[in-house]
Length: 165
Image (cartoon, rainbow, N blue to C red; front, side, top):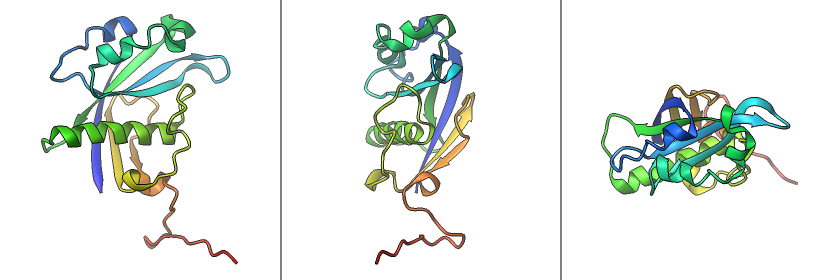
């Protein structure tokens, strides 16, 4: 089982996120909340990752897109940084940010995300367990691919099987 812990902070405006450019610490996953014509006000619009670039750089790429144009006065951003007791290698760190984003999108289905929304947990997500700490906003506190995956478990821990004729 891969245990991923995200520590969430926010809310930030787009202007405040422009100060999150520390090359040593400002990486992770982010959530954007705002108004949506169908889903209402103050809803989860987008989940993304800042993996090879800082939050400042990555979120700066949204400036001319639908998220800011939507209603920038009411747009709020929450950032999640990896945490935990053990230090991990860069490769593991990169992988965990990617897996966390993928699982969060699949479970929460933000309005403006299209990638990973209909993911069928194959391979890399089979053993991911995600804990959301801090100001996680509307995210579930704990997500496991064992619960949200395509292979449901029965009460005794075994897999349910569908028999076809």
